Image (cartoon, rainbow, N blue to C red; front, side):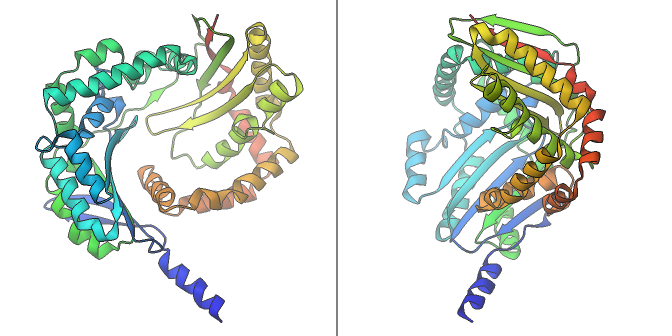
Length: 426
């Protein structure tokens, strides 16, 4: 009887994510709530659509630099003092920019929730947008960029994006370049934040020991500090299929090979679950995947071999990489291309499908252990236009997937054979 009571109590403490809206004047702001009362913690994310590096325009690195400047505290307190104030109450407050979104994240103990929301309001009202703070951030960013001159994985991956998405914002490095960072002014940052951190682009994700009624009482006082602003349509960029090659020579002891091609599928495609299974079998499943088994295990041509399908709202593509000995790079690349072509032509085997199902279904609990994982999953479901709980339905489809259907799907995607190549070698 005691065991039954415990299980019921845990069920009450952990609830599925819900979707509602916060009404603020004439603006309805989506609220994704993940209630989890097992620990007295809160996690709040203000997520701004169409506000990541895809919006950098002719100033690569602007979104990330703007986020870094928000992490410099307030103009009143400065970076160090504001960090000390946060640390005194164990409050975490940070900003970061991705490709499509800009996020301000706040986490704290529930008993410090009022103070945490107050600190967030202070940051929104009085960000440290000063010449001194900008210069400090630029020094840090330029230092990281300098260190990446010897990061050959970074270089090869960046060059692949240049090929696949030439003449689009995705071809620019999200971190920027030395020249672009030096050229960004304080006015550029102010304009970026003023345009993008607005109510019209806001999605709120709120998790932990919280509930919908309290969220709708507490959050408007913070949200009203944002301008209404205007929303924007996220562009979509196709990866090109020109099968180009870009080789960069460095003083390296091994070759870094990155390859990529178009993948004709959008983020809301009903067959997306099949793409996940196919990608896992071909190259994203680590040891046991087709590429790793053939290239490393059987032929010993690479230290690692990996491939995956990227499904974003703004772009989709197929990519992979290998690290090989210098003398093996040509053979390894030719074998990789052959493996991919054979996979498209012949598909997966029954055993590969069985093992993939076993892993994807069996490891699902590990992807839902923490509140932040569940909150992120719920956000992504909403962001991509699916109902909350869609990922569970996807797992059911994976479980029911038969080999004939999977292989018919794989054969439809011959575009992944149109591979472009980026190599960093000696």
